[in-house]
Amino acid sequence: MPKAVKGVLVECDPSIKAIILKIDQPLHDYIVEDLDDQTLVIKEAKLPELKRKLDKVLADTQQMPDESGSDD
Image (cartoon, rainbow, N blue to C red; front, side):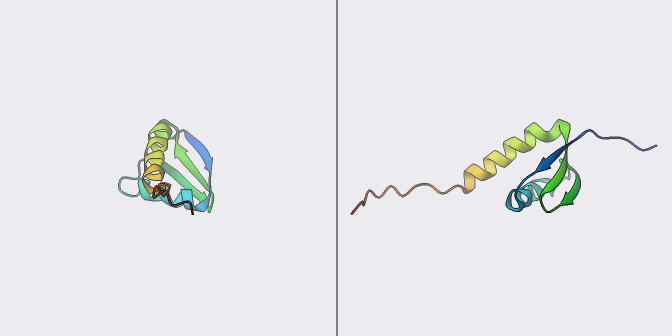
């Protein structure tokens, strides 16, 4: 018998979608359906966990400002 899964429609930039796909890749725990270049259906119960992982990845890749102090 088919099983229904509650999902949340997520629209984002292709670059963010690529990160989400990479996070989902090992276990396929988050994405229910990949609809197009900017739209995914995410498991509702996993959305908070996915947001935390996405925030961590974005924080890790964010560039730190140059602190050399050279304002010539």
